[in-house]
Image 1 (tube, rainbow, N blue to C red):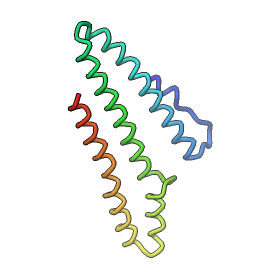
Image 2 (image 1 turned 30 degrees about the horizontal axis):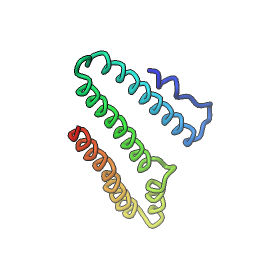
Image 3 (image 1 turned 90 degrees about the vertical axis):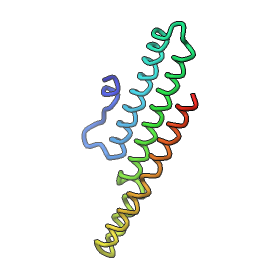
Image 4 (image 1 turned 180 degrees about the horizontal axis):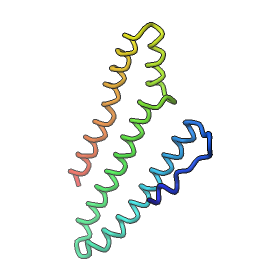
Length: 127
């Protein structure tokens, strides 16, 4: 809810301004989640601090993973960036190249989230 109030733009804002507002909301929410989780972990795991702080580290790793996956998704789907523009440029030669380019970009866009998920799972498991 607190992140909701961090998101705001003026009327007629450009896509870049809208995306910045969303980033600001996500980062604000993440900071509050980290703070509140630290307080909860501190209070609930009295006498078992080591276990509690490992859970807290997993929460932070998960938050970072979520933000990174969101950034990768935005990169591959926003018209502000090259992958989506390349699909548009492929339309010059006809609809078949748009389909081929779109499929290629779609396949490449899966790599970053999968790598982030693997790193997240391995990182949390190592704790």
